[in-house]
Length: 395
Ligand SMILES: Cc1ncc(COP(=O)(O)O)c(C=O)c1O
Image 1 (tube, rainbow, N blue to C red):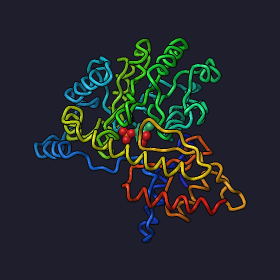
Image 2 (cartoon, helix red, strand yellow; image 1 turned 90 degrees about the vertical axis):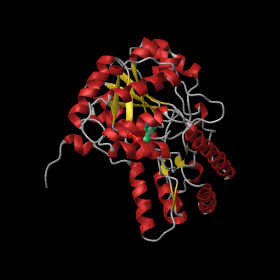
Image 3 (spheres, protein in one colour; image 1 turned 45 degrees about the vertical axis):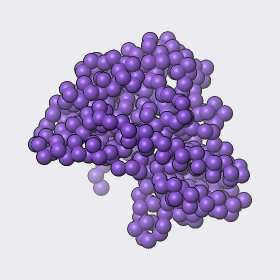
Image 4 (spheres, rainbow, N blue to C red; image 1 turned 120 degrees about the vertical axis):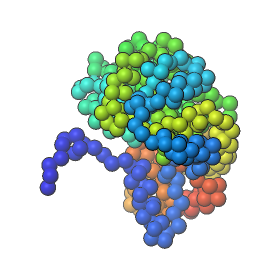
């Protein structure tokens, strides 16, 4: 057998993708599985964006482009950041990447050395700790719970600081909890992080998927003093139902962004040319589809949350955004029935109730399970009935 690198040996597979694969296999075997495991909108990419992509292919926009992205797209992103976030960036302070995922990966690669510590509030998106380890950094997990609405504050962060603390990854609204920081919370966190010279990677990929009158500010806007120590991460995947197009971006200080762009140049030479034109249409064309998708997500969130809270023992705060709910289901752990933890419970729900979810273990939160409501209302209704019946059997 070929000997793998230590880096490869340390690498964990994505738990969310693993659950989706298991559910797909059951479906192929003819089992009617309802998936609450997906991390992407179930809507089609809006027609104007699809048409722009197809036209770009027809017009021969199919060659290499500058690896940081065509200037027209970077200008378009700069206009978006000004309009939505009141942040000013030049073209060379923006790099286009293969999804927000590559933007975070590359930011960590250019910021982190062996031994550097990267703060990650838990529950966290599954890729953060793995990406930190791939940069030879040390993930330092900051636990949070339902009582603090899964949010950190300067006092909590202070307890995890060491002389090696270099970076923090913030994600608001958060996958998996859906909780989001208010401008005041971001301002005080920002001031604290600036004072301690901690670089902020601010993952804002769910920024537009917020409900009611909540408005997600960037930490770089809420705390202007943090602008020069923040790498803003965003993209089109979630807001425009464009997960498969693979466009994300980072905006930040020129020295960081230019190294991130050099890294893209050595990795994949940038993203497809025609995708970049479609993304300009996404960012600058009509935005009505976002509102339609958001309205649909909101009614599903309300229905699913209500259904979950009707089940005795389940605790779930009202999330401000994303398309996830992250209830505490630990009152259903029952060792005598073989369901001792959230991984076992997610397995039980898949095999007994034919509903796919993702165990909280994957997100560093062992008492919870993640339910995605990126699924039709009919499926959500049926799935919630199945959940209720299956949980009763554990009592
Ligand atoms: C919190 C978070 N950040 C980043 C990403 C990656 O987004 P993209 O598909 O643009 O790479 C995801 C996708 O699931 C996510 O949930």
